[in-house]
Image 1: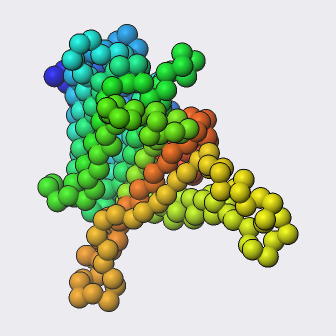
Image 2 (image 1 turned 90 degrees about the vertical axis):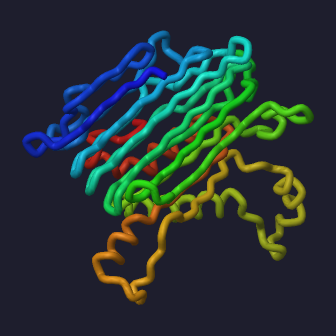
Length: 311
């Protein structure tokens, strides 16, 4: 397994890359500065030679974000996974440690698997009570212009978050595989993108609250049914039932929940509340609608990251 390694630490009061190593086919691009000079954030772009992941590739990346540092891990374009040769599959592994009062944003473009591709990825994050983490993990149905829609053989994405070393905080796996009786395209129907957004930690508390409210409004409007007393109810009832929303989203909270009335010290309660995360899951008919959603929801992070994500 080819491995890349990046360590970000405070040097002279600034987040700085103190170690960077990568081996073919993986490469890191680290700009000197992204956004305002007042922003203290290191941006890391991961790329692969050839512009995608070839059948049989096995790539691992190790990231350490030191105490008080801010780091963004992103891509220059969608991650293309080329067709499988024989039984060979491709895989990527990311292991990340996020220190105290540190922030890691993993905001790649979506994965796009070509026809017959076999791909799996595993991402493991180790955080402490006041770490902050933004994770966007998403996949499109394939190359639409070639008529490929959910035409790959296998896709598996595993995301694990551990608190204080080895305490499980969030464990999740998405698994898509062509079936004997029903293919992925049939099961996904008209939806062409699935995505997951994780917001964890004190630096993202306001965004956590906002995204929950926004998703509630979006789905309330999307799934709104006229009341029986409405004049147009009888005329539209049948059509409305047959119309699928083009964008579906849900939000849920994960992590420890501690009531202030519990017999814990004030400092412990504060730490536990900071550790609560929000996960948003999305199914959409267009990639553009997911980009728009991410742009809107994450735009307030510009002061932390230097630029608006997905802008």
